[in-house]
Image (cartoon, rainbow, N blue to C red; front, side):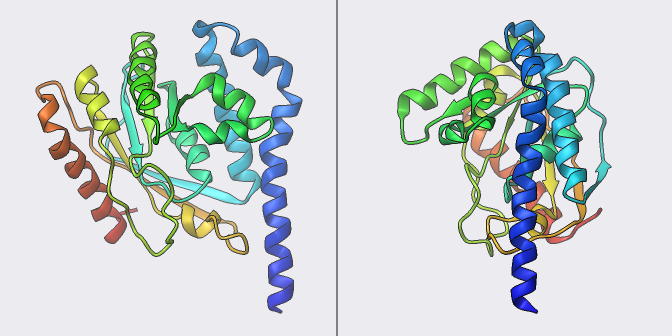
Length: 247
C-alpha cells in the first residue's frame, strides 16, 4: 500500500511540473511580447495570474481567502507571507489581483529551464551572499515602485529545511524597503501550502489552501531605525495566525 502511495506521489510531482511548463510553452510568443516593454508588465502580470490559477486548480488545490482588508487599486504595497512551498508563488498571485507586483527572489531560481527565462526578466533577483546583489535589490525595487508596482518578499529568506519549523526569523530587507519608500506592509498567512506541496518529495495532495489577509501596517511615520520593530510586529501577526487559525 505504501509503495502504491509513493508511486502516486511521484506522478503527482510530475504533473505539477507539467502544469508549470505547459502554459509557458503554449503562451511563449505572447509572454515574450509582454516583457518587451516595462509599461506592459501589468499585462504580463495578468498572464502570470492565469498561469498560477491553472496550476492551483490543476493540482486540486482550492484557495479559501479571508480578508481583513481590500487592497486599493493603483496603490503600491509590500506583500509578505510565510514561505513553506513552491506553491507560495502561485498562491500569492492568486490572492493579489488588482495590484501588479514583482517578486524579490533567489537568483538561483533563474537556472530553472523555461520558468527561469521569464523569472530573471520580471523579478528582482538577489544573491544573499553577495553584498552588491543585496544593494541592487533596493535600486531595482525603487525603479519598480516608481512605475506604480508593488513588491512581494517572503521575509524568512527561504523555505526552512526543517519542516517542523513553524516560522523562521524574518530578515530586514522587506521592512527596510517599506520604510524607505513609505509603502504599507500587507501581511498574509498561508496555512496549508506545506501540507499540500512541501519540499519533501513523497508527500502532498489535493485539498484546501487557506489564506488570511491581515490588516495593513502603515509605514509613513516610521524611520529606518524602526525596521526591527516593524519586522517583529509583522512576524508576530503571521505567527499568531499560524498557531490559532481564524480561517
